[in-house]
Image 1: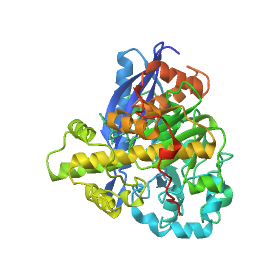
Image 2: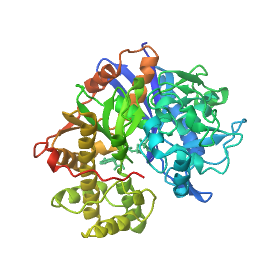
Image 3: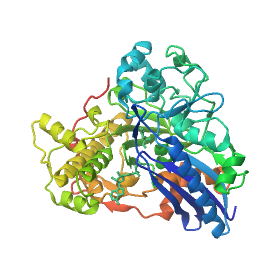
Image 4: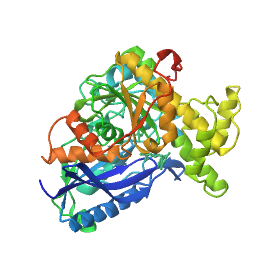
Length: 489
Ligand code: ADP
Ligand code: LRH
C-alpha cells in the first residue's frame, strides 16, 4: 500500500487538528496540516458547540491534507474522525440539526438525574452499562431534551461523518459513553430504552472501529479536492479510545492517563467489572478498540488550568505559560489541594476564585497568585491520578509497572514529575498526539497496510516515539496514596 496516507480528524474540547499519517519503516510519520481552537460557547441561552464552525474547519483541514499528500505523491486513502464523548446532535429526516448540540458543561441535566434514576435505578444502569456516573452522560442529556420526536441522535463524530458521507452510524467506542450500551455485549441495552422513554432507533446502527462508514458526498469532494471514493472509516471515535489504542506500552502491565481537558485514568481489561464496589469507586467500563474494556475513571483535568489562563487573559495580558509553570515548579511540595472531581468545577468562568474558595472550605489557604493556583491544580491532579491508579489496581487485582501519560498534559513536565512522585511509579510521558495516532493506525489496519491487535499497534507507536521518563523520588506504597472519596449519587 505504498503512497497511501490517512487523515485523522481529532477534535478535543480545547482544540482540533487534522493530521496526516503515513507508515514508514521508522514508524508512523505524522504531519499536522491544520489546527483550530475549540471551546464551549454560550449560544441560544445554553452552553453549546458550534459544530457548523467545526465542520468548516474539518473541510479546510481535509483540503490541506489532500494538498500535502499530493506534494509527496501520496493519496489520502481514508479519513477517521474522533472527538470528545457523550454529546450529540439531533437530526431530522432531512438531515437538519434541530439545534446546535448542547455541551456536557451545560447544567440543564441537574434537574433530570433523579427522574432518570426513578425510571431505572443507578444500580441497574451500572450493572447493564458499566458507565461511571457523570451528570452529563448522554442518557441524562436526552432526558433533558424538550422532545425527541422525529429526530435521530448522532454523537459528534458520527454527526461529522454523516455530514461528510450522508451515512448515519453510531461508532461503538463512543456509544459506550451514552449510558445505553450493554457493557458485556457491546450492543444497545434495548431493555433500558423503553423505561427511559427513548425510541429503540433513536441512534443509528452500531459499527465497530475499522468499518467503512461511507464515501465522500460529491459536494464534500468538491469542497476539499479529495476523490469521491475517499472512505470515511470508523476509528475509536471516542478520542480516549483512540488515545488508549496508541499508548506506547511494551508490556501488558501498564496504567494509562490520557491527560487533556479531562484526565482519563485507568487500565485495559478484556471484560467489564460491573460490581457494586466498582460502581461505588465510580469506575467506568468504556469500550476500546478491538472490543477491549477501558476500565478507567474520568477525573478532573487541565480544564481547571485552561479556565484560569482564560480568566487571567481577560483580566490582563495573557500570562506566559512556560514562566508560570516554572514558578509553580519552584514552590514547595505539600501545598493545598482540591478534589478535581468536584462537580462545582464543571461549568466555565471564575475558576481562580472557585479554586481559592474550594481550598478555604477545607480550612486551608490558597494564595491568589497565579503560580500558587497552578501548583494547587497540578498537585491536585497528580494526587488524583495516583489515587485512581491505586483504586484501579485494587478493583482489578493487578499492579501497573509503569504509568503512561499521553495527550497535551504529557508535555507538562511538572505534572508528570508530581504524578511519578504521588504514585511512586515510573511515568513515561508521550506521545502528545496519541489520539491522532490511534485514529490513523486503525485506519491503516482497515486499509490492509498493517495487521495485528492492539499490542502490535502499540509496538509500532513505541518504535516511532521515545517517551520522556520521570523516575519517582520514592518507592510505591499503597498506604501513602490518599483514600478514594465517594462522589457517586
Ligand atoms: P483536549 O483533547 O481535551 O482538547 P489536549 O490533549 O489537546 O486536550 O490537551 C490540552 C492541554 O495540554 C492544555 O490544556 C494544556 O494544559 C496542555 N498543554 C498543551 N501544550 C502544552 C505545553 N507546551 N506545555 C505544557 N502543557 C501543555
Ligand atoms: C475527553 C473525553 C472524555 C469524556 C469527556 C466528555 O476528551 O472524551 O473521555 O469523558 O471528554
